[in-house]
Structure formats: C-alpha cells, structure tokens
Image 1 (cartoon, rainbow, N blue to C red):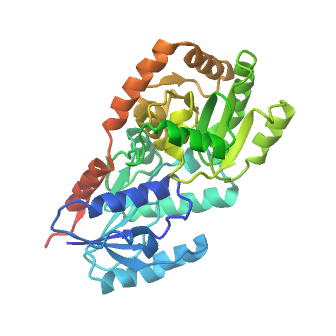
Image 2: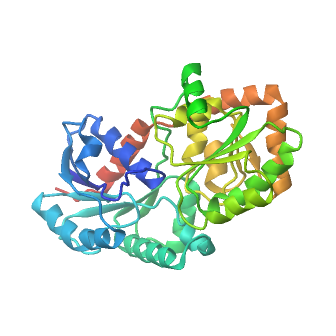
Length: 370
C-alpha cells in the first residue's frame, strides 16, 4: 500500500510535535516493509534517506498551510495514488476521495482541558481542527494513555484510539566530559545547575519552579537554574519574576538550543525539573533519563505515566513540595544514583523504532481492503 505522511508542519526549530513527526518519519524509513512511503515536507529534512519519496513543501504561514491541507493535499493524495494518509499534528483533510484512510495523531488536548493556557485565537483554532479531525479519522493515535482518556472523554471519536508512545532521540545519552565542558563554556554556566527544558509558555509552570528555586538557593547560593526553550506566548512574566526576586545572575534563559548541545546540557545538570501542569507525553523526561540525569516531574497525567518509578513525582501546584524535591535530590547522593539507574532503564524501554512499528500496525489495521 502507498502511505503518505504530512510533515508540512515540522518547524525549523523543532520541539514536541515537530520532533515526533521528524523522528517517526525517519524510523519508518528504516523499517523493512512491503508498503511504500511518501512524505510531504521540506526536502532538506530527509536528504540522507534516499529510499524515502519526499514531495517538497516549503514553510507556510499556519493559515496558508491549513488551506493547502484542505484543498491541495487531497488532490495530491489522489495524484500519487495514496491509500492512507497520516496527519501527525491534529489536522487532516476533511474531504477526501473514496478508498482513502486517515490516521491522525493528537499529541494532547490541553486547549480543551486548560483553555486559559492558550491565547484565544490559538485555542479556538486548535479546538476546531481537532474536533473536525476526530469526526473523520479512521484511526487516532495518542502518545500516552492519559491523552487517550482525554480524547475519548472530550471528543467522543468514532474510531479506535491507540496509544503509541514517543521516545528520546538516538543522540541522547551520557555526554563526554569534554562536551559538557564545551556547552558550559558556550552558555556561560559556572557551577552546579538545575535544568528546565520546554517551550516558554504558561502551562510549563516555570513561575512556580522559579519560586521554588529561590527557596532552594538560600541553602545552595551557587546553584543556577538554566531554562532552555524557545519563546512561545505569555512568557515575559517569568523574566519579570526573576528580576523581582533578584535572581538575574542565577536564572539563565538560553532560548532555543540545537540538538547537538542538549545531551551535554542534560548530562552536566544536577537534575531536570519538569513540574508541568499538563503534558501529552513529556519528551524531556526521557531525554534527561537517557543522559543519566535525575528527574523531578509532576505526579499527574502523562508525566507520571512516562516517568513511572524512575523520577521524583511532585504536586506541580505546591511550590514548597517542588523546592523540597529539588533540595532532596541535591543532598541525597544515594537517591541520585538510584534515579540515574532507574532512569536509564526506563528510557531504554522506549525507542523510535518501537514507535514506528506500533504506528505501522495502526496503519495496517486502518488500510482499506484491496
């Protein structure tokens, strides 16, 4: 069968859903199968995969991309004799020709559960396209059981919802000391540090993390908080809070960090603090674990599901408990060693090859009969 994957939404600076789509396509290209794959994406993303058929799709404004998806993509699917199209980021063509199956991935439904976390226009847009996709999809994929439950509850889809977990990329693992020293010098990190990795938007709970960090720093005056992630929306308040608390020299905002630097930044950190209010999966948890970095994360939803017993789980709404968990990890060497070992084992249970094979099984169950 001929299977198309819509990678047109992969941004140049990838995070979350972009990483998922990129890694999934690469992993699918490495599986021996009788099926043929065609990808709509920027050609430069997959130049090194000669066995993958790529239809070049340049960068577009979201509104233009949506119009392309709804009106141009169905024509291209018919022209290229596609049997199934996978839309990995909530959207899918509403109207397609007969005999074409649609698989959609819902990475999360935060905009339905925590609407205040999003600007009104983005919230309305994501809600509309997700509800439309849930109505027409022949199969739905979610990265965690938590999101599956939310999709079933909030969207009442008319098709099966299958959990297919994400994974840390192959580049994540304990970095050499020389690499750790290189990134320390490049990002001007002198001394021990806690790392936070996520796009800069309200739901990541950085305000409480910064407040918890202030409490911890009274006993660890040399400790730094390194906040890694590209600006999204409503993030200026975090910088204002840092100024009000007098932490300008202790809290660093690096902005977007390229893939080649992240493993060393994780490896050099004393711990990852990831007390997010809601996640569809939580890739930084597995990335840090794969690098041998102890993890603190939220005790609810997908983050608790992904971390299992390999992290310290905290109430993300309780600043004192976040601070106490950081303090405990900094002071308890045996606990750090235990979580490092458990974390590496937990991260090894996930791989993009596993993700690809389980996704392929969803495709095969959804393909139209010959």
